[in-house]
Amino acid sequence: MHEVLRHAGTGDRGQVACWPEATTYGRDMGEQPIFTTRAHVFQIDPSTKKNWVPASKQAVTVSYFYDSTRNSYRIISVDGTKVIINSTITPNMTFTKTSQKFGQWADSRANTVFGLGFGSEQQLSKFADKFQEVKEAAKLARDRSQEKMETSSNHSQESGRETPSSTRASSVNGTDDEKACHGGPQDTELKNENDKLKTALAQSNSNVKKWETELETLRESNARLSSALQESIASVEHWKAQFLTCRDENDQLRNKITELEAQCDEIDKAKERNEELRRRLQELETEILDKEAELEDLRKQSEVIPQLMSECESVNEKLQDAEHRNQELEEKVRTLRKDMEESKHRQGHLKLELKHFLNILDGKIDDLHEFRQGLSKLEIDN
Image 1 (cartoon, rainbow, N blue to C red):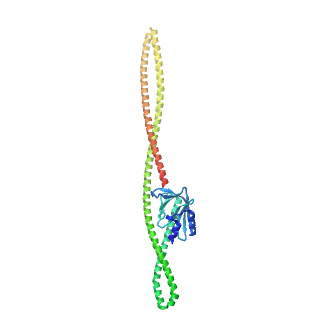
Image 2 (image 1 turned 30 degrees about the vertical axis):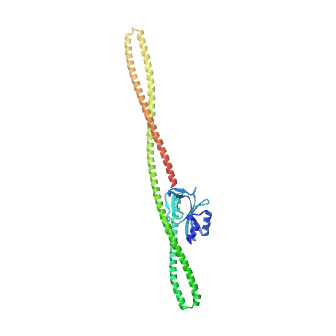
Image 3 (image 1 turned 45 degrees about the vertical axis):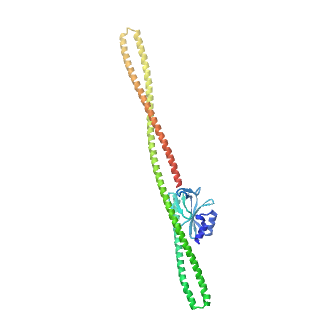
């Protein structure tokens, strides 16, 4: 009888068509809410059995209901007019916390796995504690029901053994009229009670077979969930390792950028030194021109005044000194030009190296961006 009522209330695979029918059924059978919270509802993808599919667009109300008539518990959640959770809690169910704000349980009757995402770890803990409490209550109710059925079965067997002796006593001690007046109603009552007990025993055997089937289904579902959980953990560990590797590479690139920036500062300083050398070169060229003009004047004076031979000798000495200084200045100019060329070459090399490292950095940043997108998608899936 309980199985008939359960399937009539829950529909095919533990789901109902719409919320008004579910509320009417709960009200008629004495079903009342005992705990309510809000969470995002997910269901496992039936094709892959790995990915989560959102059952609600936003956080919805999730409630525990207790049916005092059937002594059973259900988890019900509604999004608008659509029932997205209608799960009867059995002693074999297990609620698993897969993260700080996410938990799941498998429902073999609905042939799916439900997942709930909460706003805080405290809400998840309260829901998990209530699930364990309701699970223990369902187990206690099942044990009491089994004891009651065993007692009824024993009583039926004892009544069956007592009925023949009563009949024999009636046949020996009384006439046919007395049996019609006294033995008939008692035998009819015992027969009716025996029929009821046989029906209850048959129903109990049927329920036992159904429970065995549900237990096997739950074991298979638990094995699938364990495998999916292990794969999810391995995937998370892989992504964590990838994240740590990318973070280390990012730190190395940042250090390299710091070094390149320091080298750029040295390049700027080298540019300033080159500018100073260029100005100094211009000053030396101007000085050379002045000395050449002075040398030309001295030559003119030596041609115009032949009598100043003695002075010419001194002028020649000055000229030699000036030429020597001119050579020294030319040598300095060549040295400065060489230094400037080397500085330009080094500056060009540093620019190429900086461009190369910037290209590498752009590639690593793109890889890191793709990795973050993959990590965000994984968190959403979990």
